[in-house]
Image 1: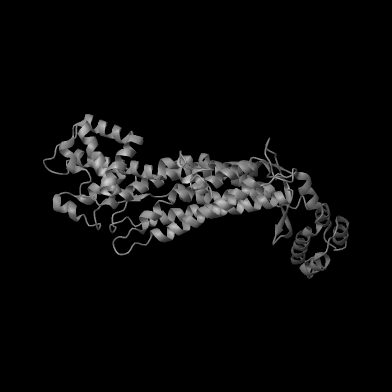
Image 2: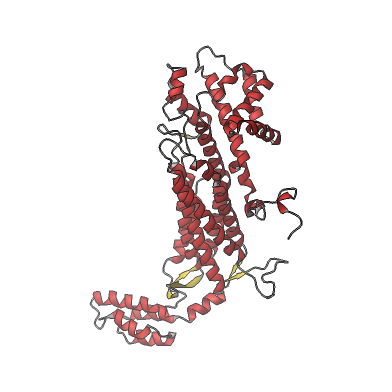
Length: 478
């Protein structure tokens, strides 16, 4: 048995990889979705509610904060640091309630700035969930807009650049794993640009909702304290004006979390499309369509020195699966709360950062992986040259059109090409001989005779370039 417990080692060893091995990739999320970030946002919400009530003279006879007091209070809130965390922990050790600890910590700050006479205005008419739902909305908004979306955009940017550079590079397609109508590598990558772009734009347009309407969403305490105030309007102007969130006008004790579920479903869908990209890139590498650029000093295998493994794409696969599993679970859990309130959301929400972390880590790895590839045009050309049978589609399509235009001898074109090509490996000469004997007009015969698998790519190159241009023109700034 080990003589030293790793749980006692200082500094503390992380249990999970996001705070350990992969910390450098996920550290930015700590500012938004960690427990400390939640408490910082709670302090911000409480302080801004306090200021909102005084500046709008909501409670008759209560003095307005001076400009100096407002400045001092906001400066204290913005200076959230290790000392603040320690103060919160000390209060929570007594209260055994995290939001009450926030309230008492703010009251301590009011003493410091000489505004303790207004201390009972802190957390005025609020239930804990009034503070929590707004704090989580701020955290998720910050994590989405400042961390996740920039990483997603970096992936699409990198993918678009690669698609544009490979727009003209012909490639044998593989439908059902079998040789199929040729395309270009750039067009296939542009398909992912298009798919990811749609999800990105949905996520960038997310409404982050919040409420501050009391214990059961009825403004009961508010009206009891100040019957003459327009509390729904006060709440709306606070949520939208002070916090830059979208106001939810009708809730139970909790904000319903439907917007969270919508957002998480969109991020999960983006993950799954990115997962499809990872598996396709892995497959192209295994087919030698891409060569991996070795990283100096890196080892691909502990026993096979020749190997350069596609580890970035494999890492991305696993982390995208973990992220989506968590996001799916969160989306399913958060939309349900028994009657007016239960606490299943409270512990679930603390895993939002983990879900985002696995996604961010995966997106970073996809960008790195794409940046370590070089196209192998020789391999692509060899595959095309070995599969002339894929031109059967083109020939039978020309025959159909010719038959419809009255050219004789064009009956059953599909069946004739099926007999010639299905399950067989044929060559250029075989196809040219077949075309020559069809009796097509000379112009069509010449066109089909000149056709090769490498030139049978339709509008693939232009489709790729059009999608890249669309992304560059319309991608929303974050």
